[in-house]
Amino acid sequence: MERDFENLVYGNSLKELRKQNKLTQEDVARITGLEAKYISQIECGITKGTISTMLKFCEAYNVTPNEILHMFLKPTSSNMKLEKLLDNVSKMSKRDKEVIFSLAEILAKKNL
Image (cartoon, rainbow, N blue to C red; front, side, top):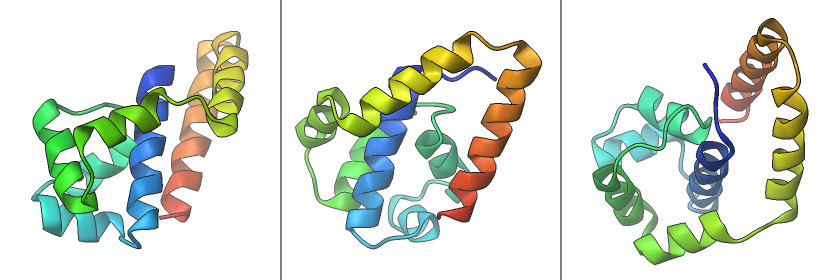
């Protein structure tokens, strides 16, 4: 299950918005009608979802699509660190990549 940088940055941006709004993934699931597991997959960079999904996030966080996309496109130090990390991970064996992504999922769930 290979994740690309864009998915991770987008997911991280949505996670930051959720935390700024002091919401859990379960809260967002109730507000949007999305499954909490699906929200987790988006925040972890497994998928980006659809435009319809993004609009649901916009309603939940009271932001415009432009604000989400601006966060997504804006280079931040955390995004640059993430890009460097992904570059290093891309050089690892498939087995090592799976271990890294499994650990990342465990840590992401811990910090919900």
